[in-house]
Length: 245
Image (cartoon, rainbow, N blue to C red):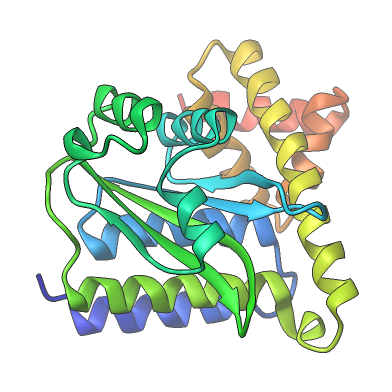
């Protein structure tokens, strides 16, 4: 499968624009997982980052189903992204029914509707900071073109995490990663609170948070905090969603 050049170009421009003023790391990484799905003909994508102790955490996912699958992968210490992170290389499993080295992960992925997975390393020089998981509902490997584009997108994610300051000092990299992981916890809590208040699915609640943040030029984690703490802005998020119904 050949990835359309025009779509690739638009995606790189979009991601580059996101990297400039008012950079929101969580929003940027979520956008990247969505674009991976659109460009690479896969059905879902998840992104794992290592914290200050080298422990992987789920930071972004194209949907709630794959986020839960990634969490299960971490809890059971097995899966494509974990091997990819440890080995620093791309890992492909073209048929999860034939992946005995990941018994729990492979079964859970198949039950979620996925038949194959590819994991790409997030690395800068010799330092690996995480991995991107690409799930497909059909068996088979990604071709060379897809792998090339996928790795390029993953490299952009790595640059986004490091940002221009982290290219100079390792301490900034650690701070950036830790901030992202802390923000992710806040956002996950807000998704649950908003879903309960509105009686909607968690995925829908996340979309409502993102739309409000982008429409009002607010950082996603700030909006999430307002929802958790029942601040006036949190009520505005609820009202904004209700107006769309």
